[in-house]
Image 1 (spheres, rainbow, N blue to C red):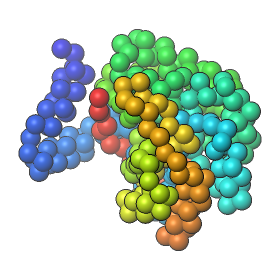
Image 2 (cartoon, protein in one colour; image 1 turned 135 degrees about the vertical axis):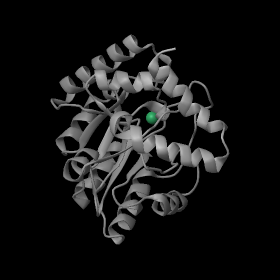
Image 3 (cartoon, rainbow, N blue to C red; image 1 turned 90 degrees about the vertical axis):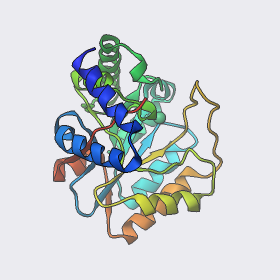
Image 4 (cartoon, rainbow, N blue to C red; image 1 turned 30 degrees about the vertical axis):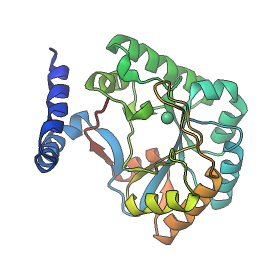
Length: 255
Ligand SMILES: [Zn+2]
């Protein structure tokens, strides 16, 4: 068993402890290892939050979303899929032209935990290169589909020249419900310096039925931006928030 496997096994073994002991064990391991092996899940920022969108671009959402963000003068982070970028290159260019941050979510939505280390490095490095060619920008942030991550896949992301971005607040916009409940739940759990996970669209999961939602994702963003400014927070990109006030990191491993 490699050192990485041992660490991974130890981490997963904490799931067998009582909830209280597990919480304490994870806090200890996290405080020691997160600076070295952690994934970004926020920044030390007072007064900023990052709202992030995965799985796009998407023709029924991206143009209206960009229009809203232009009106509000807000720049956010888009974790795009290359399959969608190849299908809708004009949408990717529109996001770039508006000055938002482009980050990688994958060529497609596969779990990179299922790839051996060497193949994962090749896959990620190739995707980074393609996205850099398409955008003319340096791509250095990556979010794993489903948040699936092992120490091996985390190392592959670093080897490919990127950092992993997780989230501090899952907007759970993959559950079909009304916009108000998405917004209320998100705001209850989002805090200053936090990263909110949302989606432009939902890529079907080959292992499960594709989640389907019917609420308006632009309206969701509109209302969230209102609530964020009511709190006195400024929405910004992950890269900007981290550059201004330093990354918060957490040990993030899940199947
Ligand atoms: Zn995704």
